Length: 248
Image (cartoon, rainbow, N blue to C red; front, side, top):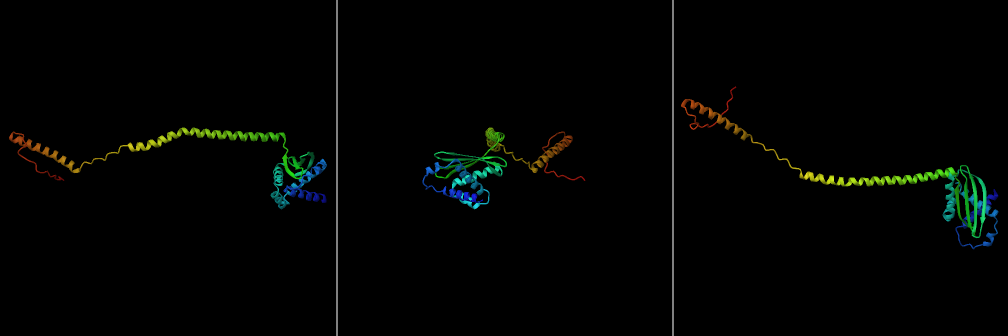
């Protein structure tokens, strides 16, 4: 327990110092570090990041993420990988590579669902420059992801092309619709207005009937006089008026 507290305190100091860039370069001390020490150093960094992301140290995690973008990226990478990894089990493989520019520590982590590779890079001033967590997928899972990505990409392209084709095909109806709207007001303007029906006055109709009746009566009187005098002429009489009488 005291060992992990000591490591946690040491890593905390390192993460806090990573926000400052005024330290002098110490290449000789760095070159003397062994691979075992580098692995121990990187493992302590990983355990610190994992503990801070466990939910028990949210306040400290927020402080480190705010002060150091590298720490913030390390937290984000580990948390995003945990969705596929599942719960952390143990570190199963460890390796380190030391060169003149710095050190690279690789840790293989066992998870309940998937394993993951942790890559931690330090510069020659003992400052962590990056920490990435890469989930290890099986060949079948990689092919399934590639197939789904291809299917989604091609499906999206075909759907967009179909929509564009439908929109272009609708352009042929636009002139017809415009012509229909332009022709309708013209037809309404040229439509003839029906003439109002001419009503024949009732007095004129009655007068026509009376004239016919007068002619019939005159003809009958002329016929009667002709029978008595032998001449058929209507000059000797004039019809002044006609009165209709009700017989019943």
